[in-house]
Image (cartoon, rainbow, N blue to C red):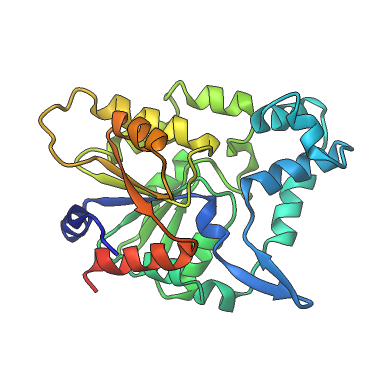
Length: 277
């Protein structure tokens, strides 16, 4: 497989900033009573919210609104939101061996020169896998956490909150609109971390609701930086079309095309390449 050499260079310089999406959690597999389970996807979260609203067929709601609007409706109906977070907590708790056995999570934990990792995932897969694999880490989910990092710890920044900080979760359409103002503590931190860094997006699809927001941040941050020759961000995309390539390029983001059905193997090989193995 052919990967951008520049990624290896910026990693060696300590300037690579991994950004982890739901696709990485979905790569974790385990069994419960012989039933194969995977990490949560965005669509599963939306469908569960629809079920809690009394809709057995979530597609009936999707005819009328977007996934973000469904989650907004969920909050407006005053449904106890803990039902949704409890579902995530109870249904998506893989055994430690499953996390340790994830080649992607192992590869991420071995990126020793990366001191900061971002994720929009609500689950605890990333931090739990790092801990089980011996990578000391600190969770940053709110402003107060930013001053508590100990020597030797890497930071895992839960950019959209997590299940332990539900009031910080960016979940509904209104939540995303507030974040588009780029005025929260997490936004300031992200824009600061972007300086002289190259972002590597893993586990995102072109339709992911996080994508447009994050890419707008990237574009706004560097649109006046005409002297920079290297791409400021990369994203792994499965079988990308010309449509995706052009739109990403306009945002100064280079696609790493994954012409394969086995995304876990592809990303694992990419991480090995970055480390120089």
